[in-house]
Image 1 (cartoon, rainbow, N blue to C red):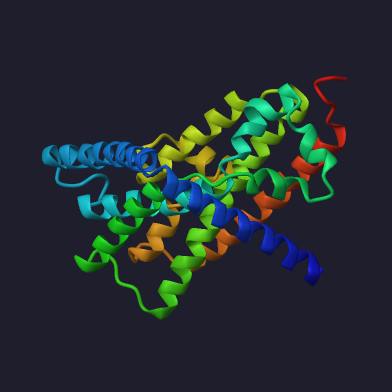
Image 2: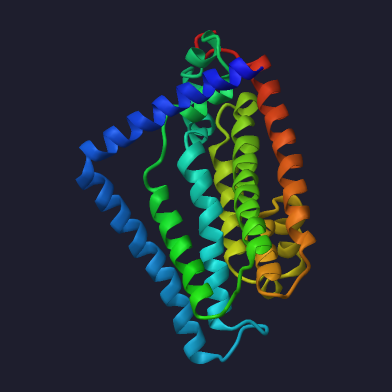
Length: 266
């Protein structure tokens, strides 16, 4: 087991090294992509400022608190985007085109092969925006972190990233049955935008879906309750439990899918 972990760690280290080499060779493309992402995020934040020019608060939430939640939502999404973005191609292309064959033939963990095939440089923008907004909230007194809260913050960000990855993997894995599950995955991922804002502003149906069916509320909004002194610490514990449960379900679905996979040539 220990040797296997070391083997995969060494392989992934090589991938990361290669990623940075390629990124440095195409600096213009990287910077243009980063600039485009920052522009999109600036539009989203500007929207919040425009809304608060008309109203003093939104269901008891101040502008600065909403900006904090917005930033909080970007970090786990960025972690997921950076390391597991290639899963999207399982949903859209690999299964229906037969490209998945090459993963089946290699004597390595199949999901590791899919994930490690590439890193997504655009995620740097999400991580940067999220970090800037969270740090800003700390310095202007919106939130305060002691050592225990900082540890819980880090745990929450990785648990949130696992929620993103698990939802993506589950819906992408449906491609083994329906050949192309991209539209299902896209629809599920669009629900993540609801997590950037307090869920009280949505209908009961939407709140139920994003809390217990496709639980993006546990990625940003619910953890934010704790960090803003509006909720108990065990929200983070529940987030971790949900992330693990989702991962087990998603990975089991993926494994089952690989067992019934038939090449496009068959």
